[in-house]
Length: 607
Ligand code: G6P
Image (tube, rainbow, N blue to C red; front, side, top):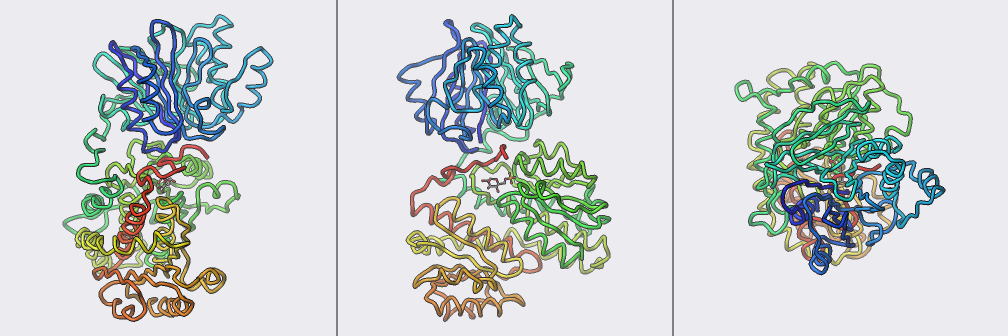
């Protein structure tokens, strides 16, 4: 989604604004721009497409100054062309915006009546005109900015340059994150601490409703009532080096390979090394005593929730309802009086998940965030946080965050089962012991990459691809299909293996690839019957199984990816790896932009 960077300094800022934008590329965008205050007032440059295009515009017509704002835009209102790219400017005001201004139409009509002429189809442009309108009423810069922000409804993070020679950044946050960075003789604002990592690690997170006036050596933050407030300066947990690709071609490839360490780190936080028992800390009472659990998320995180439902229900005997965040709060859900809601999110900023979390809080539920970003909005508002320690995930298609979410949820399910006396200590310990070798099992799964690479050309040529599984491997089949769709743009569908004959089987043609996830478990035989049904209709079977299951597929599958035996609840975590690798190598084969697939955003901060 849209990214914001701002710098006020005693030296030129253009190059670093562009550097900050490059670090925001991972969020997903389709145009970019910058504006600076120079001797002649506020000047800007914008371009559709990648930042490279903006750089060549800047090379052809250079601008620089010591105070500036920059933006990557993910189009919502209006096509991704130069005209609609941010910064939006009118007179002595330039703004950048992330989010959606819901009341932009009435505001635009009102401003048009007083003579303002709009140049774009965006909702954001209205902010620049509102500020100019207030300046024209003889308000000072800060009052004009605050009065304008006051009129906005919807979600926003805004940064503005106000006045043609003013070395000040104005910023406000309502629904979309914004941080202020403290440098040496300069100050920054950014959509996240990651964008500012090369410049500073000392950051302050604006809270909901905050506004900030940022000068070269000071920041004044006001809360939503306009009262000056102190917000704590923190050391951001991300370093610039953590976000380099190293020897890998893509962030996704690097992140796939980081999974053994990411899982080891995550598990270490949730397993007591002495007793080998789950450590659920502040989440324990919320899981032990809830009448029902509600697990809410979007995208891949929702599929982690869907796997967890099987674990919590079968081990802990607790009813779990899973919901897609964007559906949940609009369907008047019947919520338990004594319930706990889990919000699973890599970024902790997904607008729908955040809104669903607030909905649950208002309804009186306890809330737990299973989150990768510790400083995120959801982390700050939930009753308890269970962190996934996957490290920064930059590739748009989630990999290591997903498997880390599964690890946390699996250990939580075991812990909950023990707390609810559905497992005794010995049984719980046996389940936990199964995780001992998980990093090594994942390493072995990554070693199937050469085989996945040889399967990729078949998938790349396919008209469509099916993924099937039963039990915990059903949501995993959905994840396999989602991964493939996201980065290859191939039509791909995931189905419960037993459901295929109720419709989707009609789509099977001679040579249609069907990827079957079926390690040896009590359901494997049933899945094999479904495989027979597919094969009888010409499907090309690609099996993902374990050593014990492999013989079953010898005569049935064109390719069999053999994973090591996966004890206890580790299966879906290990089996996720070849799904990631198949998507990765198929995308390589097709030459798509793997880390920044078209139209997608890493952190979706609009509804
Ligand atoms: C976007 C990303 C997905 C991610 C989803 C939820 O769609 O492209 O990879 O699964 O958002 O994001 P979250 O940060 O809440 O896990």
